[in-house]
Length: 126
Image (tube, rainbow, N blue to C red; front, side):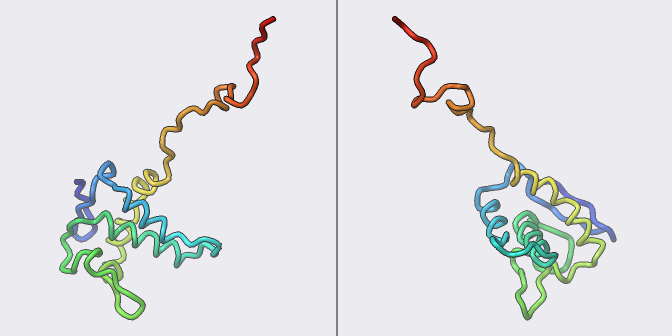
């Protein structure tokens, strides 16, 4: 579990990328709207979802983000962070989003190998 140093002698413990689970990916994808313009607010929401999933401990005297996500009327823990610390946490997200966006090693299909079970064989016999 990597400990990330943050400005002001603060820190945050994040789960290791290899410990991400399917539920983390699904929660991140649910934050992506379909058929809606990608605005800064939408991007903020997506990043907040991810931070709530990957921060497991921190030095702030605030509840962990997963325990205090906030809502439209009340600020969540991430909203109360000093801006430099919040930005430093955002800088750590690329590794996680890269893992979410990586394609699994594709298995070669019969079409990519040049053969198809439905196509006639190129060899002929008389």
